[in-house]
Amino acid sequence: MDCIFCKIIEGTIPSNKVFENDKVIAFHDIQPAAPVHVLIIPKKHIPTMNDVGEEDGELIAEIFSAARQIAKEMGVAESGYRLINNCNAEGGQVVYHLHLHLLGGKKLGSLLG
Ligand code: 5GP
Ligand code: ZN
Image 1 (tube, helix red, strand yellow):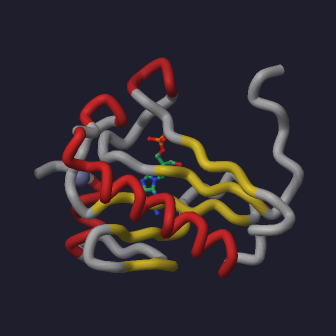
Image 2: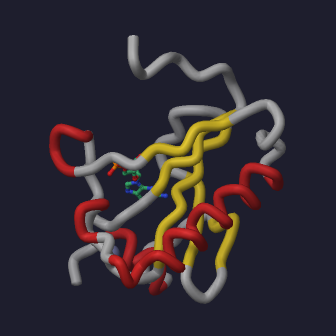
């Protein structure tokens, strides 16, 4: 499959991993938009948020659990951080393998203007 994140999971593309368990991995974004910018992804190839099924409830919980753990380890749990999912073209999605961006380490601007 021609998916960059599946290749990162397989290890054929290197990444700077910060978390891994049987269902989820997380690694530093190659083009960080903040001092802390980690991508959290399921090992299962789910293209977009729209493709998350009822059967994925536990997996989504695992992703959020990983996010909490990583925020703590990166030292931003108390100062604050943001989790973002971009869905499809107008949402700004570029890589079509479900991921959460964890951003922190600075005061983030308002997204809502
Ligand atoms: P999206 O716009 O799809 O929500 O975000 C995709 C993110 O993946 C971007 O922030 C981009 O910098 C990151 N990215 C793309 N290719 C790679 C890669 O090969 N390695 C890593 N670590 N991040 C990547
Ligand atoms: Zn994939």
